[in-house]
Amino acid sequence: MSQTQITPPQTPERSRSATRNGLIVAALLWSVQLVSLVAALSGTTQAAIAIHFQTTQIAWFTLMTLLTGTFFLPFVVKGAALFGKRRALLVATGLGFAGDLVAAMATDYRTLLIGRGIAGIYTAATPLGYAITRDIFPRRWVGLANGIMAGGVGLVAFGGPFLSGWLLDNHGFRGVLWFMAVSTAVSFVLVALLVPESPVRERGGRMDWVGGILLGGGVTLIIYGVGEGSDWGWSSGKFIGYMVAAAAALVVFLLVERRVAEPLFPLTMVRRRPVWAALLATAIAAGALNAVGVVIQLLILMPKIPHVSDGLGWTGEHNAIVTSPISAMIIVGAIGTGAVARRMDSRILLALGVALAVIGYGIGTQYHSTAAQIISWGVVAGLGTGVVVAVLPIMVIEVVSPEEQALANGAQNLALGVMQIIVSQLAYVVMAQHGMVLKGTQFYLDKGFTNGMWLVIGCCTLGGLLVTLVPKAERLDDAEVGQAA
Image (cartoon, rainbow, N blue to C red):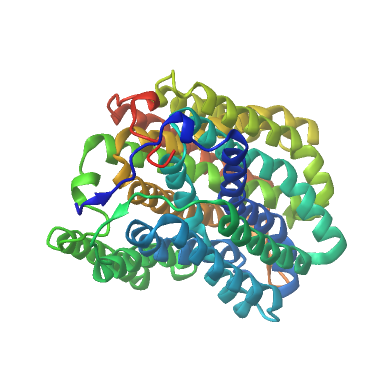
């Protein structure tokens, strides 16, 4: 591990005012949750885009951003460690804005996917935002800031459907795409004006280009192979070839990382049981919960066509009204978790969140035909989701040092993104087993939606069980934080 340069903590008299800290939290909240907002907008819009472009490949509208984001994530977080987290966040935001412009102006589906792919680089904002909070806030603010930022998922889930419904109903999917571009531009301005640079970085380090290409390439091969597996055939030579090539790239990556002086993700960090166990449990649990939107949004927004589609056919506005209580519970769960994280074992919090989500969605597999049914189980699942998303960055803080924070957050988001993509694509495959293609568009029957939810439930349950592998770590109150406070 290369040496780091850390500014000593300031005395309370020299600390920033609460107002200034609040503005920084607001700027980081917007940057981090814009990733979730775009995902929510994409989910609401995908049915309209599939019908407009008459494509059976609508899965790639959402997966393309995850695909490119996963590939470039290692480079962005390593760049953050070398050149500064704020600077890396601004670069990722600028590229995200460029991709949003391409997508908004696209006249064919291929160009639209290219734009979404470029915009995917912005997904690095999530690990960078959480890493910055550890470095620039005093101890008493770290847990609260993480809870507020994670609770933004609920704000996005609460306001996102209303916003996307209004945009979609009044301005079509183009209005949604242009709103994404404007929102990314706002994120750039907020970070540039309000967020200070972290003093924690590697000194004299170098970018591990070979390691990054091997890691990003290996993961990309897995994602693309899984994405096309249903068309190629899961036992086809093409699918197997992609998986073998991906495995070979990842094995070579591990060999390279053991020899280079400045590894992309130091194996000494990842090999520690508290680190790899925490990354594994959180990535599987949260990745599965992030993927459930694929099923829920298609269930709600796809039209009702006898013997062809069992979607509820709701408008975007009706969807927003029904799901708003669920979103409110996400906020409650996330902020509540941030408030108690200093006193409770984070492993218990993760297990509790997973249990609530599994119970909620388990009921949802049987009852999802009316607004009252969806609200009744959705508030339980929403509360559990809020707990899970809030505890993710906290578990990483508890098991790594400050200089490892950005890399560890990057590793967590990389694993989470891969899991989300795999579960999402498998959900499309599972749902399509009970559906049909009509006029170039894939539709789904009720059994398909039900089986898609069971897939998510199974993966989330696995993540919850894996928390038993995480050894007891130091509490958030004992972790080293506030280097720039």
